[in-house]
Length: 468
Image (cartoon, rainbow, N blue to C red; front, side, top):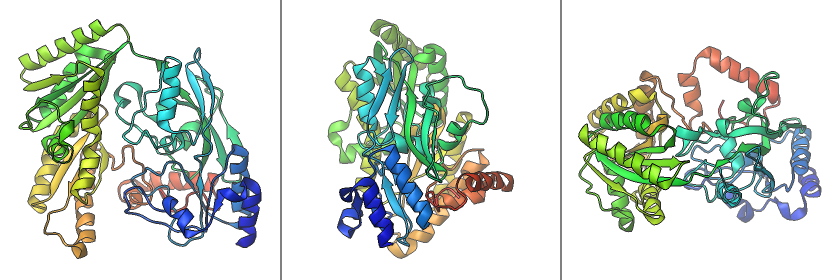
């Protein structure tokens, strides 16, 4: 393999082919420190042309290639296996904003650009790129596209499939396919863009994209509401949609356990609201008319919610700082979990109408079968995506943990399946959830997916072992 790496160094430059253990280590471990892979090298191309050259070399020498962006994933989708045969292709040097078209409301961006950088570039042109994630300071748009990321504003703007108008992709053969035209209508055959988005690098490597921009809202209003149950939260969602219409941008559900964890580990984040309610909802309106109009809407919403007995208490942000405090509360739930200790993460989606019934039934099953486990349930109620996380009982020892995790996963995913949901909403499948694909998808769907994989990547060199 020395010849292969020598050719890679010629293609991208000696400093950008890392093959020592110390240099590769940050790229071979996920950010939680739970998963690790091995590789013969980490390669950092600086252009689409260099990506093409590396992929052609990988084809020539039968070397698997694992694309990686910010390495912020939760399902080991951007890590190689343990054989050490693969190379990790880190795309963070492809970080240019190629074009911003304020008339077409589009941005053409390379795959390694940090999400927050894109948001700031759009804002500088009085535009909004609405994708918002907890990892937005380090995740890249290529990874967001590869996993069809969602975030907190899917309710109004949709996930990455809705936000992307075109892709530039290096195929498994090292060829280039591009649809970077910024078209909103192009009905000329199979939609390769939507197929590649969410494919986790198993069909090709995304090197650039055209994404949608929106006019910046004239006002944003944020509020935290307390209520008795998930069913009340669903009724509140229906009311918010009726009262606020398209101004409703965010609707985040958080259980009392979530906020108690944040209060324990980040007490400075807590707003002035009692933690004696079972459920909390973070609401955000983005208004295109005026601040007064936004305030009138939110006042009308909470007035009716109180009258109908849906909301017991509420805190309304009266400044940007207070709004950021409420959103920090939501975003610090995973960080509080990490400080608390080991937890099993479940990124699930359900028909919105079934969420309350799912929570009631699944909570009951967990209490019955695994007393002492802690359920940390939060997520994007407006689009049906829950992060139904579980911490093990304190008496579970390391030797029992793997078996316990498998049992809990099966209980939760069987419940998700019963309610016509999905075991992965926005994190992807990666390696961690690969077995669930064959467990819950039909044989027909599996055969179709395998046929697509074979057509795009017949030698199985594109991120092998992920998804299928």
